[in-house]
Image (tube, rainbow, N blue to C red; front, side, top):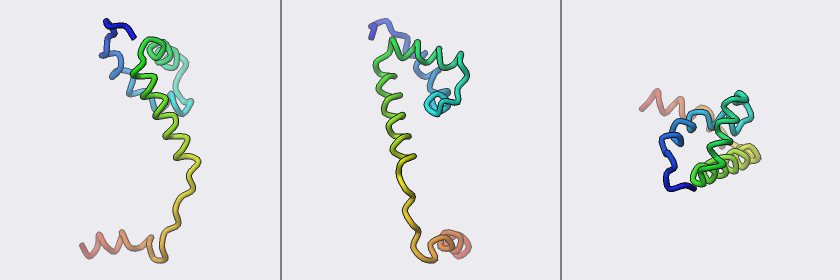
Length: 80
């Protein structure tokens, strides 16, 4: 990473990261992000970590709710 790296570009690209990770970003945004990632090690780490987190989440099976667990939050709000 260059010492003159403009970190303002990092925050600018964060807004499009979810679409990029999900493969839903437009080609121009993908090109912009990939060009930035080639020069910014910090952002490569962020994107890699986010990508791994998303993959783990997608692979995880939802935990079953205890019996009556679906109604409990609603009842809590009503009686709270």
